[in-house]
Image (tube, rainbow, N blue to C red; front, side, top):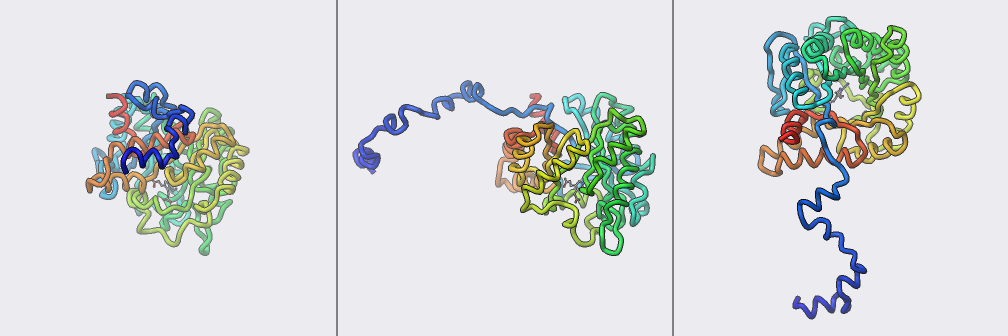
Length: 343
Ligand code: PBG
């Protein structure tokens, strides 16, 4: 098209006439003006680093589906916690790969005072008391069927599971956990954990509810990391949320708030930005996203193939959580991001 034809396509009107001189590109013209109008920022203070624990000393086991992520023995976890704290990362969340011999049908080892989670917490807290430690009270690392609850006749029994999750939570608080984050999605767990923590003198231990945890395909690499993928029979649809449901997510979050949750979490992250936004608008409480293992692996795999710029994709995905309303993000990228943000 020549100039005359292009102008004709606008029916002779200039762009200034069309836009009434409102040109949104004005503020995008230079780095200084883009920085000036930037609405959302990602900082190191937004990061929670999930790490995997394994028994032993000086052990660092790579996870093939999660390049750069390792299972760490408690001593090395403490070292990494020291590094995280010096990078300014506020908190660490631990997930144990439990010896298969210690797993049973009811996850009885979950409440053992010296289980791997609790030894990890003590090692981290002894070495780095200033970092926050978040522990998951779900039973899946401890059951021999990989479910988050007690399995009886093909059913995950709710109330009995709650008792077990509560016992695990109290043991975690005794070991020094600052925040209990139950990811099992049993009804009533938040209130039951709150009551037990309070009656044991742990009024200051907070609860971050995995309030809206969806039955998702994105947990695959995590299940490898904690050794549940080979064990899991069936799926978790009778307790996790249906990815199709948003109103139900609000009800779940509301119930957890009523029972005493201090913070809400949405999991997975990027496919559920609408849920994050809704929860933040509805409840106006500290809201977190878990950028789960599958989300991490997708970015890593595409970057390894040269299909995307991994660093930019990582930063953009994390910024999106902030824009959607998150106060913070659990992400396996945490130390990498912190290094970039601190540079
Ligand atoms: C289960 C649990 C899951 C994750 C953490 N705790 C999901 C599952 O295995 O069903 C997923 C975390 C991730 O994928 O990074 N209580």
